[in-house]
Image (tube, rainbow, N blue to C red; front, side):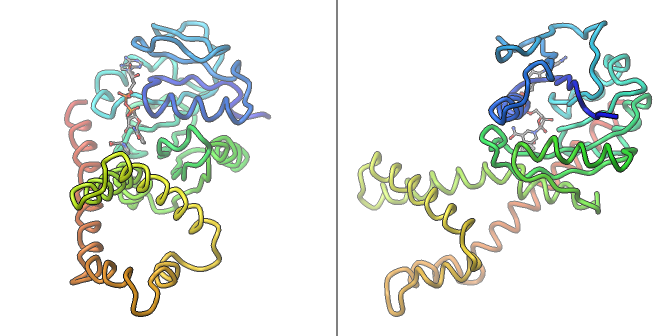
Length: 270
Ligand SMILES: NC(=O)C1=CN([C@@H]2O[C@H](COP(=O)(O)OP(=O)(O)OC[C@H]3O[C@@H](n4cnc5c(N)ncnc54)[C@H](O)[C@@H]3O)[C@@H](O)[C@H]2O)C=CC1
Ligand SMILES: O=C(O)[C@@H]1CCC=N1
């Protein structure tokens, strides 16, 4: 039996829209997707857009793409869309499998899916955790999300918020780094436009090289730092008292803790 032939995307904003664009760019048939979103201007060509929950949709899975803060309000509204024969995929940060089962008790299976915005260009890591999928459906789910980058099952769901902080929120931290590097270059004397262009081109090339290299980023950093040269002085600033590691440790902790808070608030509002 085929799995996930028709996906109803409920909430097509920044993240849901990026995933839909990624699937279509990867060659998926637009007829495989429908969107339910009261505020979306238009769906991509060939994708049916609903403003109200459709009564006649033949979907076999939904992908929840609204905000976790809306689960208490919207969960009860979507019971008819999540009955037997339907798998619930959820992008909702912080909302765990037990909460998904409680919110959508009629569904066959429940899957947490955590991508990032690079799904639009097929370059997202996608963290997944599931409850209720048979082995063949589990393989089909992985294959569906693998079209958006690299999908993987996280066996220990207790680590999901931490993995979300690193890989789901991560692009936000990288974009901040690029901006900060350019701002520092500008403050020290480069034209703003030049600093912006250099920072962007440098990060693109450096990450592509690291992804293709057969040595670790740490070893690559040492290769950049010529003995007795300039780069080591800069690395020494980042490494002093583990400054960068400590900053990122704090960053990931604060991000992951917010996932717990979103879950607690969603539970309280049920
Ligand atoms: N933005 C990101 O990089 C990532 C977001 N996520 C998750 O994706 C989800 C959406 O986040 P964003 O796309 O950033 O937010 P967003 O605000 O851009 O999108 C939310 C969408 O939900 C729609 N919506 C609101 N009420 C609705 C209703 N009653 N029925 C159907 N659709 C409705 C809105 O019109 C909007 O298009 C969240 O649960 C978030 O945790 C997960 C990974 C990364
Ligand atoms: O900021 C958020 O809550 C979502 C989850 C990961 C990225 N964006």
